[in-house]
Length: 114
Image (cartoon, rainbow, N blue to C red; front, side, top):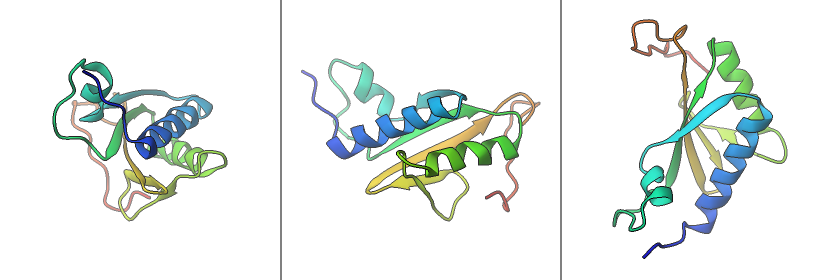
């Protein structure tokens, strides 16, 4: 038996996907939200955020994606960390990735990343 996602989380994910499409960036939803979407019987513990990976070549490209998400109608705001954004009560963690950013398969982000 499936159970519906929390309406706020569904709105957040919809805005995230729309914004990433508008930013013209390749992306993938990851993390605990994926089983809630895909499994007929989701895990008993619900997640309260969404996680995504975006394919960008530079940290400047990553910042551009976050600026797109800040615009209307997406309305995400940045938090103190370089990866977390919020939209009302909804939270998303967005991670940049590419072979350019992680040539050895290990992503290293400087602490000063906006």
